Image 1 (cartoon, helix red, strand yellow):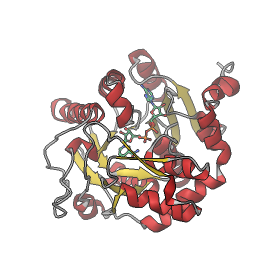
Image 2 (cartoon, protein in one colour; image 1 turned 120 degrees about the vertical axis):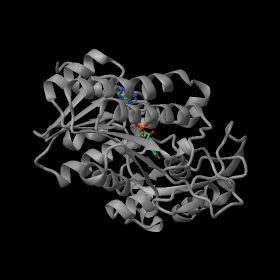
Image 3 (spheres, rainbow, N blue to C red; image 1 turned 90 degrees about the vertical axis):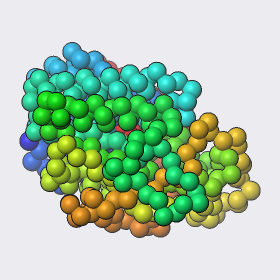
Image 4 (cartoon, rainbow, N blue to C red; image 1 turned 45 degrees about the horizontal axis):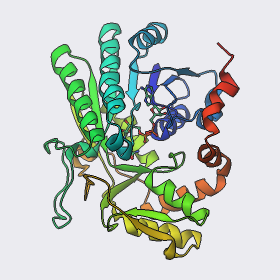
Length: 340
Ligand SMILES: NC(=O)c1ccc[n+]([C@@H]2O[C@H](COP(=O)([O-])OP(=O)(O)OC[C@H]3O[C@@H](n4cnc5c(N)ncnc54)[C@H](O)[C@@H]3O)[C@@H](O)[C@H]2O)c1
């Protein structure tokens, strides 16, 4: 089988490629990624020369590129991770979010429709449900929770979800959608919350915490997310949405304190900064459906996952130093610029 993974040079997409190639060595994996600021080709170094792997630099919005790739590779399965994913950036510049997250998904859906696939899987987010109040801990997002987005990022993801579902209903395209809570683990871009705290703490820099730091996120180790997507591809029902989350709610400030403690750094590094506009208070997923239908449960307890993640950043200094210095953006040209 050939599986097309879009956005595979990013955080979750790269983890998924490693996960898939390990568990399904017989499959061909093709990665289509534009290598935006968030994509780092050096992440894919371990598989770059693998005979079952192919990397293609391209934009999912570019219909000609997408169609040509579909014609050449004839993927049976498409998993769409490609997205503009940083909420803060969507607040300052929404347009590219609409372009990639909505129009890019539309371009992939049309290629799937035209050339035929066995499955199109859209990787979505719990942020499409908006947020929950801090004083109602009994409330969780279920798949039927109304979409109620807060940021241009989540609005663009919700639009893509609805479009994908409409292609299932209208054209019978075999679509599935997963909506996952916040992921953490290795290879996450340093401007995201957990790596930012780890890297700033390591360099004795201030740890910027939005607002009062009491916002709650439901954290899931990235490999648990990858396994959930694998199960959905194998046994999920088309036309369905599956929520993925770990019942692992933490206040932002507690995570920052844990990072300080683990790295032996003083909490005086913590610096409260003005809150993000429209900042969601609490996300909490009810993963009962994927548990009941597919037997999925998170396997990595937060205490193990966060230690592993901190250790990963300690062990992979070269990876993040290249990003922090901006050098990673030259990597593609240096390694592959004159290959085609
Ligand atoms: N990170 C999380 O906690 C989280 C949680 C739930 C869902 N998600 C979703 O999972 C997916 C992956 O998230 P991530 O954290 O790995 O993101 P990321 O920002 O680390 O990676 C995104 C990747 O997509 C690529 N890309 C961006 N625009 C593109 C385009 N137009 N064409 C081709 N490639 C393009 C980037 O180069 C990058 O490699 C996203 O769809 C996101 O909405 C993320």
